[in-house]
Amino acid sequence: MITTDILIIGAGPTGLFTVFEAGLLKLRCHLIDALPQPGGQCSEIYPKKPIYDIPAYPEILAGDLTDKLMEQIKQFEPGFTLGERADTIEKQEDETFIVTTNKGTKHQAKVVAIAGGLGSFEPRKPPIPNIANFENAGVEYIIKDPEVYRDKKVVIAGGGDSALDWSIFLTDVASSVTLIHRRNEFRGALDSVDKVQELKDARKIDLITPAEVVGIAGTNHVEGVSVIKKGGEPFMIETDHFIPLFGLSPKLGPIANWGLEIEKNAIKVNNALDYQTNIPGIYAIGDVNTYPGKLKLILCGFHEATLMCQSAYKRIFPDKKYVMKYTTVGGVDGFDGSRKEAPKAVVKKIE
Image (tube, rainbow, N blue to C red; front, side):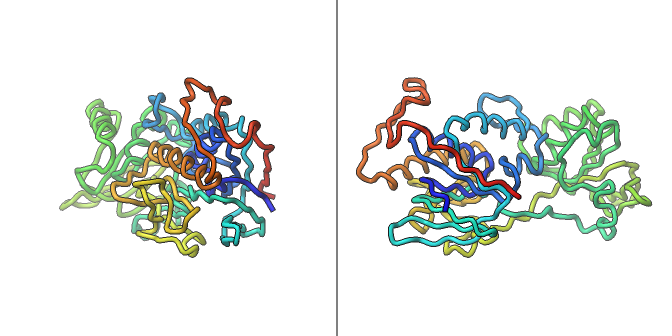
């Protein structure tokens, strides 16, 4: 049995930052993640994708953000159970929780923080009849390594942040970038929309709207895509890669059966207080939760983790008064709490 103060389900950016905030309170943390390494989507799906809304970083690659977070929490020596999925949860008579993974590993904690991001997910695929024939042969739904597209012709479809950001990024990598969207309006950040417009004006991006990709041509690899503009006739664009970025279809997985209040595949929390769920002692932070005005940003997950840890401290030590100190005054090691030294790490990696 692995015991800890706060059991964090999900080792993405929000889960990792929770370790730091808990560490300031001298609270021990252990993380469970189904992936074989920390970082969540930032490590598994788009480690080379630039992120622009992290304070103090005008731009940072998703993989580098994970590395920085791991460096920040190293001093608190968190434990990890990687390559295992949290399956069941049981509340004990002493108000602690036992969470068991799909491989039978048991964890006991007074507080459970669900930071599972979007949960398990699959890419949303466009309704193109022969698209499955070209998957891993020029059709990619996720960009992991931009160097794959070095000096290649690339067609991207989509109208959200991911499509816009990658179109911008790949202009310095690919020989040509074409962005296709079925509407003239985009759902992404206004700054990204303006940047795409600038690149279009500079002839660095070919922007085709409103239009859709309706077919793929090629023998053993993508050689072109068939595009149709609204009210027009289909025409062919030569390309080496077709990347439809229409988002992900998330699933909560076993967590959906834990008796938590769910709304539109997200966990409802009390955002007016501490991001606690309908079950006392279980919190949900980051993209996995929902409340009025929710924004699915890493920045917001960091804020939620901070307030959650303050509430967790009160739950774990109901008779102990905590007085907040600024890190600029007390430093990282100068915080009062229940322990003077960080605990030794417990690590269970994928076999």
